[in-house]
Length: 323
Image 1: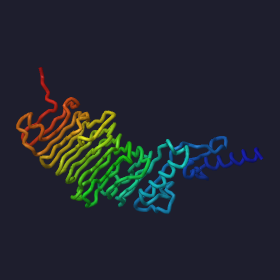
Image 2: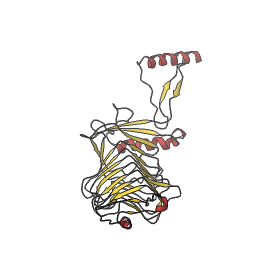
Image 3: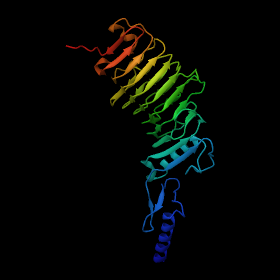
Image 4: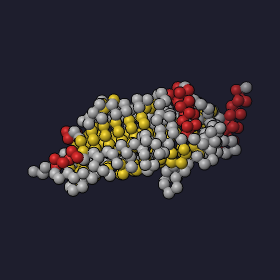
């Protein structure tokens, strides 16, 4: 019987190698499987991949390939979170969701835990797929979601595009766009007690009525806002409340932040953020260095080389003195 089993495994391996049989895919919690050169069924890796196709997918599919793609991100997120929670192979893994769409219209109430969401499609003339909706994930154990190359398009709603609470930790947005052109949007991102947030190389545009990014009361440890371009806000730029805490260093670094009005561009009421190399502009008349309070509110003990331009002059914060 053992010889027969080994011979059968060898035969299956040869069929897979020649492309006659597809690579096997495991179910929830089992991870991808394939067959090695000795005919043994092995685990290729622990993380799984799910596929979302806004133009041809169906949520009755299993999302295991482009041919069997889900239609909505919500379906893929449900599958991902079940997989991560199922057993020891998922608990500490990192899955991937691939999205192609013009825009998928949905407001997400859950984010995929321990998962990379990767935009591989395009939305009209834009080089990334879009999601039209306002998102407020409240699912438990919502850890370490990373969003890559996604166009977050707001609806005409007086709320943030993304609202993060203490249900979320370690969320990241990398090379994404936050589109507030719908006109009544308040914020791009609101984060309250949501630590380890990373917003890297993203763009914000549109008339955000309140501001681009807001940090509310509670822990914001390890936050990094870096390399972002922000323009059009009718409120402020980036703001941290006085009640925000940060037990690990947090940084606003190398951002270009423009406010269409006289709103404060960089406003750190917590005095805990390291602000490094930012460039900003608003419509306020500064007159002299003392007028910097009309454009920024920073802890200058944690500030390095920030240049801010009002309606009349530019100031460097903190003040640069050349001996």
